[in-house]
Image 1 (spheres, rainbow, N blue to C red):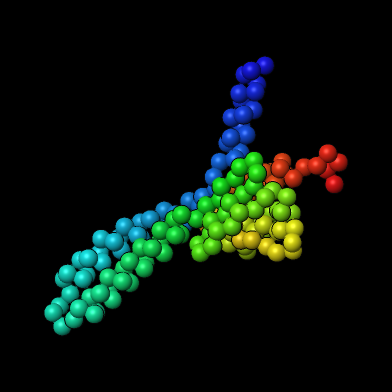
Image 2 (tube, rainbow, N blue to C red):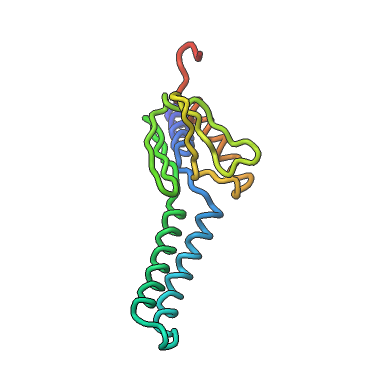
Length: 156
């Protein structure tokens, strides 16, 4: 029976893999590279009519765009036996499994939404509609995890 336990543990590890968007991450990383290369080119090659404050402003905008792209690329959801850590674009939040009531990913939603026990909702940008069938599979995996970790003996 050890082989069955090994495959069960492997399946459970796969189920608990991090959630990360594909399309948004690729686009954000490509844009960050382009902006980080072109910003110094712009700053050092603009005509002499721009002064130091303008050049610093150009560089600042470039840094801000790269930072934003990095945040977009780092959106994710980490799951473990105790709960879920959601890192969205601007905020991060840790939830225990018991706090999650349901997972929604209906038509028109740009990303998964968790309904919480306190009546609040939490957007989960780690699973994005732009990823198509992959996103649907990931939403289903998230729902499976919630069901697995919130099951009670009576399952009420």
